[in-house]
Amino acid sequence: MDLEKIEEAMKKMLESLDKGTRLEAVVEDPDEFRVILSKGTHSDRAALSRELLEDFLERGKRGHEVRKAIGKVISKLNLMGRKRL
Image (cartoon, rainbow, N blue to C red):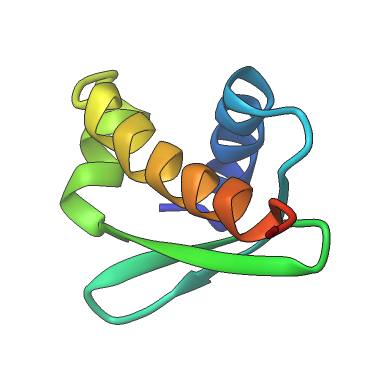
């Protein structure tokens, strides 16, 4: 799988989920890909398996699982960015 293709797909998904969140990097590990996201001064990452990304990018399946994983990271970043009383 090509990192550029993964980055493009993740950018497109991020734009649809939350316009304020930025894709910092996609890092390839031996058994998974780590997608690093940031919002404001906070950053976090999601670990996506090779099989999951392959199904999503090449076959168009399991997109809901990818969206759920990315959505959890976005939610966490939004919570970290909120001002505390």
